[in-house]
Length: 182
Length: 140
Image 1 (cartoon, rainbow over the protein chains, first blue to last red):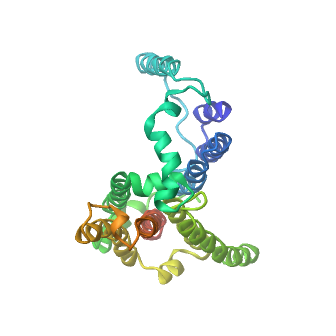
Image 2 (cartoon, chains in turn green, orange):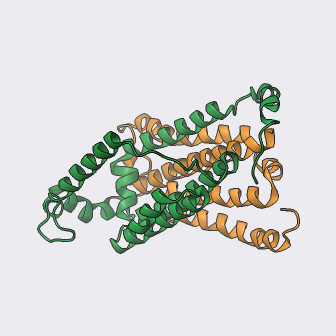
Image 3 (cartoon, one colour):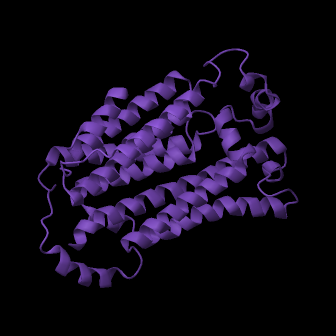
């Protein structure tokens, strides 16, 4: 995964970068499976490795494969981002070790309650689904509304509503001169 | 892609299987891994494969963009509607216990219905986004 990230930041070919991004998502999905978080891995593989790669590739069709080569290193943002990254890594030191028996999450009342009662209360063995859909129904409703709003936003940005015929007239003059790389 | 016979035939075989798998993930989400979000994405990806192989116009003959807009809203409506129905039946908003005679079957029914709403919204929104990304080129 580290190799993927370094590769993405060094590569100047956007197509290769997109594929590496997909590989990164797939590796992340494998990592989630190793950690027994099957639902999250499922989502990561479907959305991260699948759909978002296709969307990035569709965007590359319009922007062209190569990005501009000469990028000057600006020191202030670099130092700032390194500092923030360092702080975040320093913050992870406080996270309890993975999979230990006496971690706070295993001793919390709610965890025990979910694990023991959720199947009896709903008849569904997949506790993740029970928590997502039933116990945290409000959150999921919010998520669905967010997805819906994202769709509306994309439609508005790309002119998906009925103004499409007008857009056609406007864009024909501008895009005739540009080459569309295939 | 009119000349790629292998791609066309293989994807013709694959698309129904992908859709079937999406439905399995959708309705089996309370027993195995999966649920509305994943199922929606997988269902949309079957149709995206159709767009990639057969072209945008042919896919838009199957599902129009305006239909997708209605479906995207319908999913949210189903989800929120379940909440309103539970309120009408005497419970709190999104308290599925009141949907059926026993609390357990009510919970089960509620989870199935709201997952269906999630799936419909996610699938149609992703497909909508892809339609408009793919449609950019058609406008040139």
